[in-house]
Image (cartoon, rainbow, N blue to C red; front, side):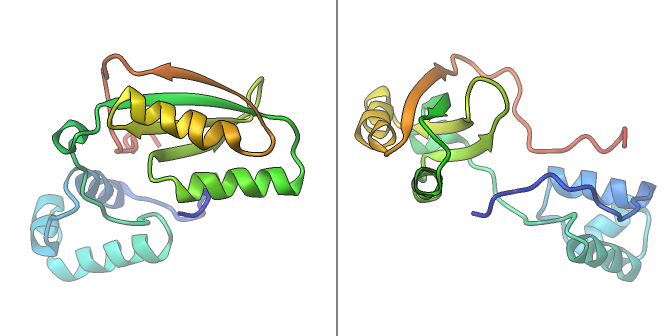
Length: 165
């Protein structure tokens, strides 16, 4: 998984592009013919638009979302991490841990009192504790980890709001 940078795109998106993107965010399994019908295009121009969106880096991947509880993942945590220092050895060790840990779903470098925010999923509290005490806190340069656990999720989406851009 590569680090995602916030960059401004130079690609202009018209109403049809936004409609295509909105539909694909909801159901990436739509066939080109189904997508074309829903946006009011014939299949060839629709395919060309999707291809342009992919080549332009707007569409980066297509995935299947899985219900976490259906596969035994019941604990979600947000961990705020502070490092002792920001030397290359510390940063490389932390980055390697993040990349190697399947339980770390997201990692963001932060401004403010903490250096990183991790979104972590676990089977159980014991499993989370093993990740925290057995791995994360043992990393050279990790000063502290402050964890908050998700009690209930009021909203979860991966769809970006394209209607107001």
